[in-house]
Length: 146
Image (cartoon, rainbow, N blue to C red; front, top):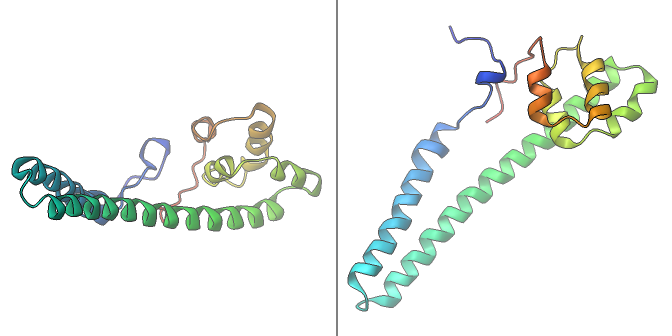
């Protein structure tokens, strides 16, 4: 049985991205550079083209990963907006507007009981996401984020 999620173990890796796709793309890029250096000046157009394509594939992979994370951030923001309106008193709703997206994303781990006080503290003290996560005593797991 996996241990409960906490500050120490909440970061996740996407195995296909981090341990398959990126190493393959990085090795392809490095091999393209090696081959170009080793066989220069023969086939220079082909080798330079290979380097450009290899670099482009790495940029594409990072771009796609970034887009997926931005979509998750937007969904988290919406979920937390609904949660805040359900849990916080009406006079505290303007406090929600003062939170940055990074703070909202960090606060999603706070239990419903500690969310009002911690969100007020995050606004008042301008806490960083790391400080918010370290301040959480009852962790609310988010196992779907990658």
